[in-house]
Length: 113
Length: 110
Image 1: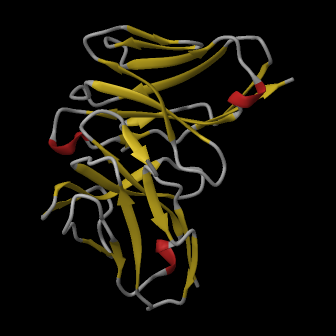
Image 2 (image 1 turned 180 degrees about the vertical axis):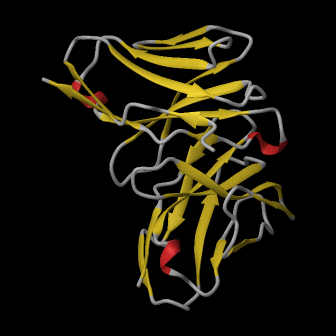
């Protein structure tokens, strides 16, 4: 049973346009959500997070939106750059021991020049 | 700061062999984690630790063991390697918010 789902395995966007990556979750105990970016042969790199007490968090070109009633979050990248091409993972945790993360299966973003 | 380091980067094991994947962090984080990532999948938690001397199972612990004798080090032991353990292994550390990942160990069991 996948508690965190990323239903789009891939997404292609033109440079300069907006990239929107989506994530759905089923566990209502999740209260902290994160996005990670991963390049080939490297470990995931933390990008941005949001607590369930907020519905939006912004950091430069990256904005995460959280819709608790729909159990849905999205990552917006504006403007998209070729260096943003990577796999993006959505992850979630509850307030339990050690804040264990449950990951989605990832979305491969390709930004075309 | 080196962050989270992992050794080796690559390893090929024969079925039934054993090995230890090393992980170290220099950020003085209390929490450390081991994940595995299979092709096309997300990361799955194998084991985690909330501090020296304290470890607990994650989602997929079978076939693995861990120990945490110091804050810095969190080795993962594979006993009797099986083809199903072919994967990329990531170690991470954190303080209860975001986790910081090492570069990974690619393990093949044949």
